[in-house]
Length: 120
Length: 342
Image 1 (cartoon, rainbow over the protein chains, first blue to last red):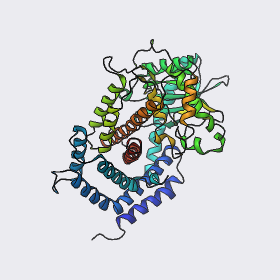
Image 2 (tube, each protein chain N blue to C red):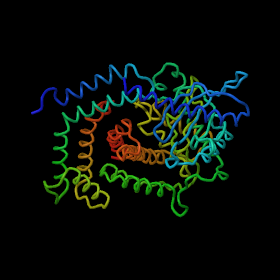
Image 3 (tube, rainbow over the protein chains, first blue to last red):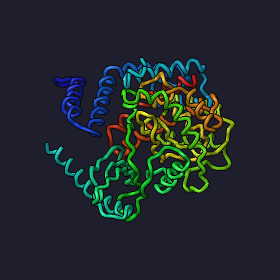
Image 4 (cartoon, rainbow over the protein chains, first blue to last red):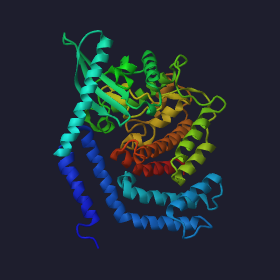
């Protein structure tokens, strides 16, 4: 077990430093990059919280969609297989099921990368 | 403290070389002695740089200027001489561009690039879309963009060598699609949504096989905007020969709305205003199906550019938190693609 602070709290400490000590006083490119870095830490925070469940759900859907794949495949391999089947025309499911899966997956990615994108 | 001091020291040294070399190049162009003042870096990554400066001569004349240069020539899409010739042709065709001053020469020690006039105005999209100074400009800008694009697409480029062109045997849209697919494949990341989009594009290829000048990056962010609207079009280095409607589709990509989604064109205007002004100024072929095709193509192209920027970071070629962060914008592109094609 790691000592306190937790990973999320460490990220929060760095984010506060960037906001109060760098972004508030820097100018030009450095100020802009401080803003970007704060956003990046926000992504990491949300990924720590939401990533495992999102990955598990995506994996489950892919195993359903891709006949002949098994639990030994990694998430990366399953996505590569789906991409390959779409390209070669050998994807056997319905277009509706495919779109529903992609929407769900992208929605979960956006909830981590940029939640505001979904609401506007 | 130590780190800040080291960083500052490094910048000063680079600036000193730049000062000296730039002053020498300016003296050659203006034919008199002078000094470079208020030199500062505006934007750009490790390969593409934009600098603002004044060249001041002893009688007090102040030439407000911009230097665009590539330190590493291998990242240029157009070589600087071609870009220079193209911007000159655009100016002659009535396209608002900054007046060109001179092309850098090999002996200048400044890399590849050129110096142009500094046009007053704003380039940062979020400010353009939100600052009250531009409130009267915004409603005019879609029509201005349409008229400018019609002029760009009418530029006679027969005298300009070095513009990338699709292979003659293949319709340009098909050739570009194949290129985009190849580029994306090269990154080795599976993107099922990109695959579905490539399939849609294959099935929707336009019949229009005209080949003309395409600016290649005509969007909010590459305009200098004043209270009167678009004053100058910048960043010509992605120009190529292809189907001109590509520029219209690119301008309609959601990313260039910078959060103002109610206005499909660059966050400032409507597709109708853009299309009507384009047709009125002599532009042809901007029908709804063509615009849709090129908007889907443009959205995917932006996704592949995101992939390329992350790759530049991950390979170590250009380490940057900004480039790293762009990887996590790919899901925005995927979301927009599904919206467009599903």
